[in-house]
Length: 105
Image 1 (cartoon, rainbow, N blue to C red):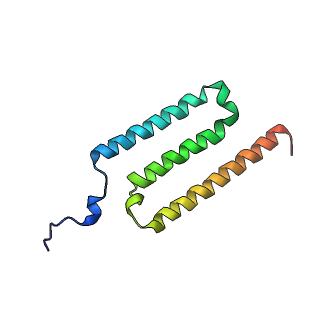
Image 2: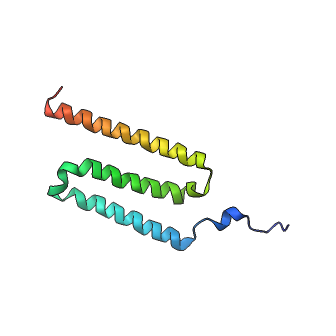
Image 3: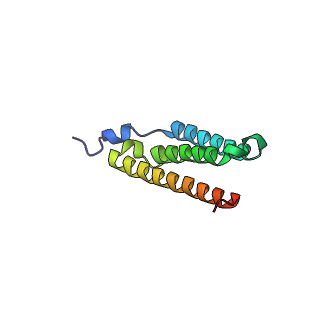
């Protein structure tokens, strides 16, 4: 076995073209997030929509740029748990401040 033999882990990592494609997708999602903010008809569903778009961006960054797609499933589950906890926390705060703003409390 040669000291310069590539390991099979390197073979599965994306190349520069795939990183650029992912960056384009992330840029497009960011543009959508900015655009939907200025659409008055979307105001009632704006917070959940922005949370969903942010979750998609988070997932793409974690999977490809942090290489979790190619690492142990344990690391993926740790990030999924963190994202889920953050999502529930955000929804809880949105509900809390929404009810306080409406005078329910």
